[in-house]
Image (cartoon, rainbow, N blue to C red; front, side, top):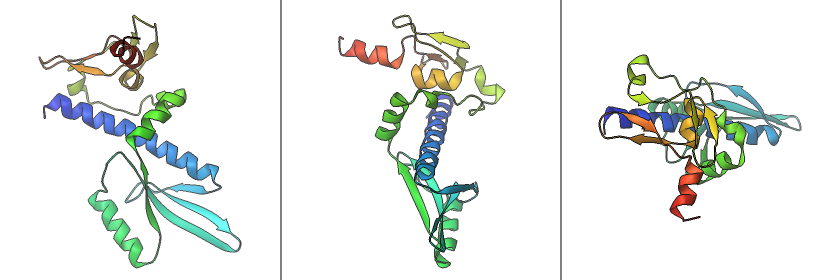
Length: 175
């Protein structure tokens, strides 16, 4: 896998992971849990009071077929020894795609993806991108990546697709 492709894959996974984590947090909050961020060995702890008992569970969120890291596996085994619940909240790629299409606020991950300067020269991305077909206009790398996608030009550069994903999809179907 080339350096550019691995950067694109890393970025894709980072976006998917962030969206999946936000979906999981929303799900727990809507079901009456409180959250406490951990960040090491798990993503967060959820807590909910049932009568006089406080239920506590460590949660790690995974998207697609992502696996636990060594640190997460170690944390899970330590918690299991102490009979403390540790769960994996998995969000499938299909569900992520559905949520992204249904919730425009998921496009607002400004500043979440930080590319080091040495990689930015490989991307030909204008700050604002517009689809010539439907006139959809977005700003920022994450919104461009989600709405338009990238194209490997084969010469070491990666460019933004000119048409948005929706228009390309409809065009392929002759709609």
